[in-house]
Length: 201
Ligand SMILES: [Zn+2]
Image 1 (cartoon, rainbow, N blue to C red):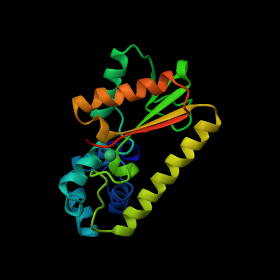
Image 2 (cartoon, rainbow, N blue to C red):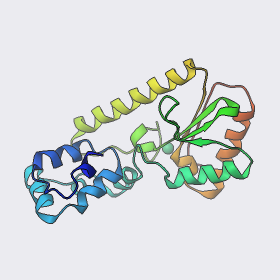
Image 3 (tube, rainbow, N blue to C red):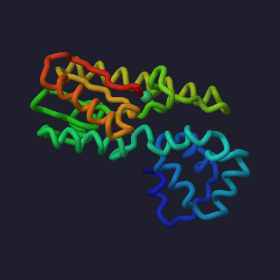
């Protein structure tokens, strides 16, 4: 990440810091920003008049912290554990597969994405909140995410992969995890190309 490359150099360009926030695609970047020395943070604040903390509500922020490209998120770990316990073996975030899916199960020609509801815009989901400020910024960001997801899914299907999408809301409670994994298991053992698992009871 660009932020890390700065090393111990004084982070002199506040414009750069602003860019990082604008491009913030994961909680990781946001957390890194808050680790900057106070003067840098203050300069950024002066320039942009607000901070991440000011512009999004509590629920949204927690969604952001789980991150669109977050790896090893709690829901993802719950899924892995449950799937592994049922005897399935998989590779993680394989970079040789388009879109770097969260799980790859070569034996079943299947990939699994765990999608955060906020970032990937799970339709009709209570976690798919919309920040009330800078609506155009967010709309553009969300549209880009949706477009990317759609391209990745199409590329995978064309390459002969089967594609499962599991929304994080389906993995938030232990009892829901086993339900979701049962559904996924059936799909893995079947022959359908695609499945989407999500929704809160
Ligand atoms: Zn959801």
